[in-house]
Length: 177
Image (tube, rainbow, N blue to C red):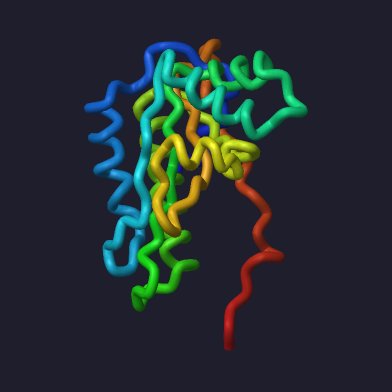
């Protein structure tokens, strides 16, 4: 409950970020999220340092109305950009919507594990998910599509974790009788 109520999206992140081995370890835990059929219909692509410039170039190619420097700045907000690719198993008895739910549950579990480990993160979508140039450069195949990217690093300023107030969910819960 503490991890859920104290997690916040962090826009500006710095080093350290988890290295590849630590990210893999946390992903192993996140991969235990509900997943009917244990299909793991997802994959992550880790992007660091100068490779973030390659992402920026791809996004700039598909965004002629946005200054390339603005796109580059937005991609440098974190030392690690973990890009989530949805890899549906087409024609499987588990419907695609349920596979998407499994990928989403895994991503949320990963965000909570990163938070519990002391890292900050922020989920990003937007043009990153719609860029054909980026999808091609990342090697997406067939039905695969970008769901978003997770900016990961250490929060620039350390503030005590304040618990969020519990939400009033009365209007979102009923009991069938």
